[in-house]
Amino acid sequence: MKKCLPVVVFILFLSQSCTSKDQVWKNEAIDPKVKATMTALNGEIYAIMCENNYEKLTQLFSDTLMNQLGPDFAKKFMPNMQQVMKGHNYRVFDEFYIKCPKAKDTITLASGKGDSAYTIKFASPAPQTYFAMLVAGDTTDEVMLTLVYTNINGKWKVSNLYGENYSLRSKNAVEQYYYAMGQQKNGYLLDAACTMALAKNCIAPGGRTFQYKKTAEITHFSDSITKETDEKYMFPYTMNEIKSKPEIVNVHYQILAGSFVPIVIYKSTINVADTVSLKKENDIIQKGIGKQFYGIDLLNKTILYRAYNELPNGNNDPRYYGYVQRIP
Image (cartoon, rainbow, N blue to C red; front, side):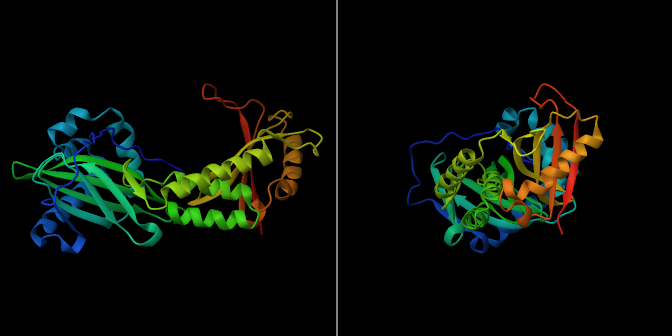
């Protein structure tokens, strides 16, 4: 699973709120001429990002944005976005055209229906601002590219942009939340915790000020399911019923052939070079994994395993041996 890095450019919020003279138009209510201009710009920027062309893209940026770009924008953000976007068309999630006579007023944008309703708050950097939210990707990973344009001396420039996960495994954060609740209800605690990890990775697709109506509720449930999981399994979890007593240190989702599958990370006392003995141990782990973590072999058709003698700590690159369990 890949997390796209947002551009590290933040507009400070001021204490003012929008005045009665401020005007906001959304989607089809936007002036057709303005919408046509911005649709062309959206398409141009999307194509440039699919090419990973930093020079062409930054020609469309405001001077303020250019001065605040960090090195990670070209090295990490653009390649990460390209990996998900390239080869896919985008769809418009929402667009807003804002006229705010007094620049720097705090604007609150609201859209969506029911539990998927959301708000975005930002400080308008200029009298005219255009907010475009584009979604692209596949069933494994969709990203939202959020473009904030300002009209500077009669010309539209990008003054800010974000790129974040919108959905993972075909579910956005709200949908992940409800799916995890069902898993918890059925006793599939570990899978529920893994699902909520995905939810947290797409909780703010429109940037740091994006907030779903359910954000606080989702965060609370995520914290509670994590606590419940930690109390029940208390990693590292030693499988005492196996003679070699392997220690399971982590279980999380990983992408395999376009799908999210659980991977079980464990420490073995058997030398990973002794593949015969290690395979025998893993066969026993596979047979009992559903008893250790109820539901993991019922909801998933594939489970990955990775055996270490020395665990990775961020500063080393220890040898490991991997296994794939296919469940009919």
